[in-house]
Image (spheres, rainbow, N blue to C red):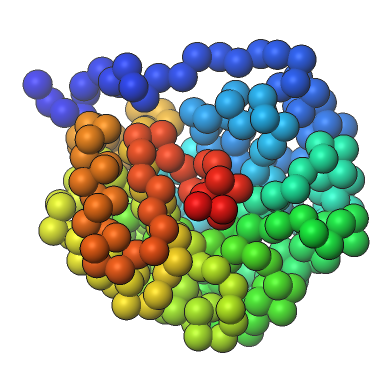
Length: 285
């Protein structure tokens, strides 16, 4: 059987969750005119997260300037920034009663700073509500611009996440507008210029080898990346990259053990793990 056409394993399937609480979360997001990566990227954990009164905010619109072949977010010319968005997110955080907030974005290569100032503004508005709220940002690579990285560092998020997504050999196929070394250097720069926890995530099932994953773990250990997440890639549509292989649950345990032996402090590897899935639990692990 062609692995790319295997049926989705039962352990990767999630049922629909529609409760009073999930409807409340959707209402608050809609009323505040906010996007979430949960909806835009068709995350399989959306129902579970909404049922816990949480979501990952997607800032700077829902049109991306890059066309990664694994991602469901549309590549198109973005709209101008909404300068009210930081206030709208802060209001949603307040209504949801969040104590841990994850902020991510589309890639905005059209902006001089890649959107770094907008990230900073969102962080600052949330802090005004309650300075004890923990904030995790998941940013694009800002084309490696260290001035942009510094803007976000200065805003002092508790966790600074930037996903490397896959192993180096698959960049041309999966994310041709990104550069593996640039993303590694991005994470290295944060660690060298702040005491902020660094985090990154990868997908498996795109055709990478075990040896390539091990080398990637070594690369991340060398730059002292604090937290690494791994989850199964699931093709959003038939037009996206197709799955080469579905990893079995026990394989994630094996990879986690290898990564920890190599020097990764905190791993969160499982079939349905996404970079912001159970972020609060991962932070407190």
